[in-house]
View 1 (tube, helix red, strand yellow):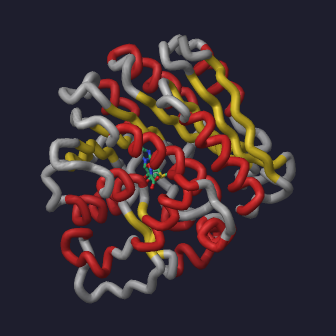
View 2: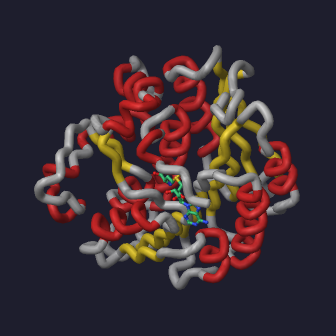
Length: 295
Ligand SMILES: C[S@@+](CC[C@H](N)C(=O)[O-])C[C@H]1O[C@@H](n2cnc3c(N)ncnc32)[C@H](O)[C@@H]1O
C-alpha cells in the first residue's frame, strides 16, 4: 500500500533532525578525496514546493523548517544546512532540477534527501535512489535524469538495498527513510538493514522512524542493539511525551550504524537546539544513547 506522500510533511521537525544528520555525514564523506556512494532506499519526489496546497494543508513545515530558519544561534553545521535550504531554488536551476514549463510553482522550496545528497556529490561520487510510488517515481525521474552520477530504480527499497550490496564504491552511506504505511515496515526495515550491513559492514547506515503513542520503535531499538558494528550504533530521538494519538508523531528517531567521528556531539548540539526551536505537540527534548558502543 502506497498512500504516503512526503509533500504533506516536507520540512517538518522530523525532516529537520533527519536531514541535519544526513548533512553531517555527507560533510564527513566529502572530507576525503576517495569517492563515496550513497543509497537512498525511499527517496520521495526529490524536492518540494512549500507554497503548494499539499504543504499548506498540514502546515507542518511552519513548525519545523520555518522556525529553524528564523531561530537564533543555530549550531554551525545546522546553520550551514539551513543556508543551503534557504538558497535552494529549483526554478532558478530550470531543466537541470526537472522544472517543467507551465507548472505553477509558489516557493519557498525544500530539498528532499535526493537533492540534499545530489548537491553534495562530487564528480566521481554516486547516488542510487529507489522509489516505488508511480507518481513520485515519475516526478523524481524527471528531476534527476540529466545527472549521470544518479541511478534511479523503481524498486522495493528493502529488497533492492540488500541485492545491491556491496556497491562498487566501498565508502558510503545507506539512508532508509520508510513511510511506515503498514506496521510490517518496521520488521522489513530492521531485516534489510541488518542484511545490508552484513555485506557492507564499513558503511554508515541511517534508519529513520516515527515516535508514536503506540508505535514499534522499541522493537527497532532491540533489533539494532544486536548489530555489533565496529563503529557502534547510535540512537537519537527528538520527542515530547505529549500527543502522538491517531498516528500523529510525538517525536522522531534515528538509528545510525557506524556514525562518523564526533557525529554524536554535533547531532547532540543540533538536537538540543531543535528541541527548543521547533514546535512539537508538547515540550520537547533530545536524547542520544549508544545501543552498541564503538569498538
Ligand atoms: C518518507 S518518504 C521519503 C522522503 C525522503 N527520503 C526525503 O528525506 O526527502 C518515503 C517514500 O518511500 C516510498 N516508498 C514506500 N514504500 C517503499 C518501498 N518499499 N520501496 C521504495 N520506496 C517506497 C514512498 O512512496 C515515499 O515516497
